[in-house]
Image: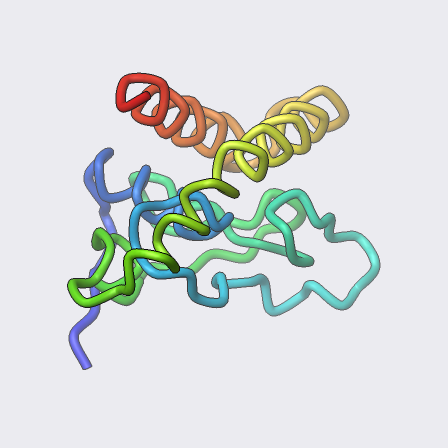
Length: 137
């Protein structure tokens, strides 16, 4: 299976982060999560415990020092052709609310843990997605 290897470009990192938290343009898949997520120290900011964040250097965990350096290409791609219109419409209707909730959660994490790995990058990716949605409205 083909893999995207770090370093990631900024557009790829943004797409990966948007996919990670369910607000991307592609299909929704289970996010990459930290191997240490069961230690009771990992949050659920991304909608699951220990969601990894894509940076230019690769994946990082904002709660510990875990890193990963590859991604599946589908995680950075747009909506696959053939997705039924009704399903895409339903998903598109949910994305703005999910996006607002994820932004709030990552901003709270940033306030609680200034300098936590990748949090600024995740917020930037979510803001970029919000701009895309606002421009298409």
